[in-house]
Length: 114
Length: 109
Image 1 (cartoon, each protein chain N blue to C red):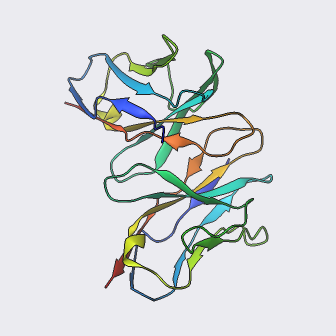
Image 2 (image 1 turned 45 degrees about the vertical axis):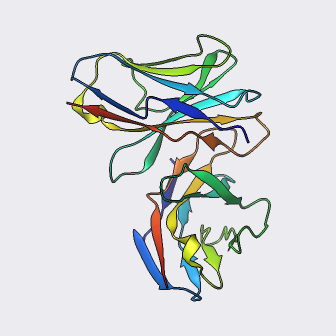
């Protein structure tokens, strides 16, 4: 069964550094998402992406964040200058179409900012 | 603003006992409600949604608009039900999910 994959599984970076988290959504899916979960807190929506543009974003998704689909398979989340508070588990998800309801989640990337 | 509240962080029951995981929501329109589950070392996956009104792995959930609740129930818990359960809401015309803080269900033998 196809699955969403994410790399790396764990990323350690220093404060102020740029980091890119990578996701490969399920191949026939058209909608892509990033969520994050700070340790002990809720899963929070960051951004959704469709047809090569952002379709929705939360207040968390400020100018430090960007997303890109550089080719036909990868979907990336870039954090330009990481802060300590960016330490979290980042989940990618994908969905087939707008009328479908199930978002398929990846296993997550744990980002640790030191 | 939309919000999902799961009041219990941990629910511990014995095998064979009934289970009810509580979820309340705040939303001005007609939301879609979901339950997602995360088993140990596995990814988040959809368990069920209110529109389908089906039973998955013996779990059911009924949307009560008057009480703005979407509690998850199972009459007889099994050890393999032990997991983290998240209630989630999707607002009208939106694609983002708003999650509750989750409830860890422990089913003891």
